[in-house]
Image (cartoon, rainbow, N blue to C red):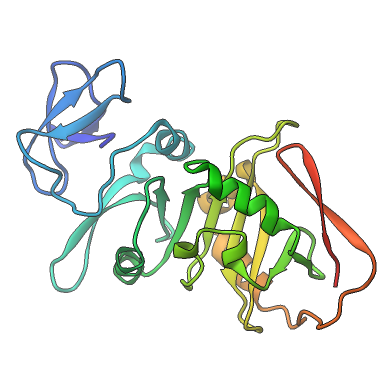
Length: 251
């Protein structure tokens, strides 16, 4: 964890410091080695939240885009179950940053628990995920909204565990050769049976999450009435990814 509680304040790990878990109150030890990022660890036992995963620098880089007051917020349901959200904004939106593999059952459980949630997924964890995405981009179909595409078969572009939910999933494939850092937001259209993907710069995603406008914007995009056509036109368009322009069909 990035924060523990000490004297009713959230504190970051410093070598030799002891803090307390914000969820269970157990003693936590500051881990400040040279291999892993500095973090807090429960003393003598596993983490009290079964959903928690060890953080990487990728997690921290994302979380540090937002005020520390929004980090690692303990959430409760009506039955007393509790979990620590990676990030929760003042607008009530939970953002989960996911690097490690997650099974469909746990993904659904988190979504049902947090209700208002989006995912940001590390698209660079496995080489094959990026390769799949590059090939899948060729099958994206243009919509009437700039930088938004139809994705008729999302499993051909994205990991299958992320293609069946009803919540927005943003895929982070890192910075391309031109210095652009695009996030690919996958979501189910409200007006069609297909998925859509909107490409947004990382800095813009941070702003949209921070000011509370992301969900309303995505709802507006997903409600477009245009449907993908059955027959492609002869013309093609191009999507830039990792400094390369990839041809895909235009419908």
